[in-house]
Length: 142
Image 1 (tube, rainbow, N blue to C red):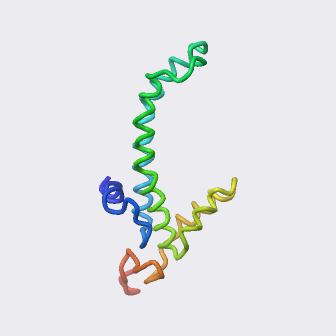
Image 2 (cartoon, rainbow, N blue to C red):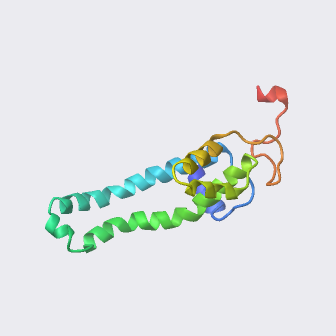
């Protein structure tokens, strides 16, 4: 949770530098968990409405909208930091943040970007800055 809050507070729109795998995946994990928890009120309100199809067709009820509001607000809050941490993760692997656009290619794109995000850091410095792992001697790496 500390990593998630650190990204939100200290790296909200920070597209420069590098992010280790741990930072990226912890941010993604906590975003998914919080998003899942925020969906629960929506389903509590929506499922009974789905049982009455004549009421579903009458438009978006205020209760349904209010149950979606926390999830919408959370999505707006984490949108920019999510992009930023993804770009910094790509930088850590020695790739431009523009590689993220490949994820918009149907089917293959998302898997390719996922593969890039899973790869280990580029050792040492690269054009986006020093390694967040620090510089380790070969004996320290083992």
